[in-house]
Image (cartoon, rainbow, N blue to C red; front, side, top):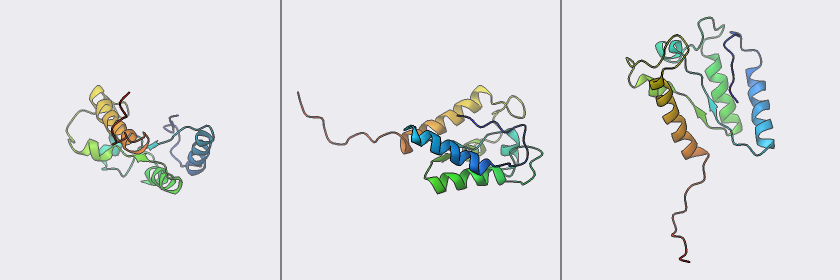
Length: 129
């Protein structure tokens, strides 16, 4: 599932919605991770804002991180990766990632999924047939 909140600048009940989605996914045996939305403003403001007209600066990220922590759900925040090379062209416009931006975020998501959601490979050798 992907949250699309671009049309809403107030927080609404993001906390409640995320909790409902996690509960629904888990009740069906689906593993969950949360991801902070990457926008060029999020990178330009070093994580302070996601949308230009946010009514509560930093609130969206705070809710996502808090819900993740409360429910034991991994959270991927792309900001540290995007700030490693701030002059790279991660976006085509204010919101849409370039191929490079998708690759950087995809690599980070893949690392988090491998570390947090996939079973660890067994370190003991398999028995010979």
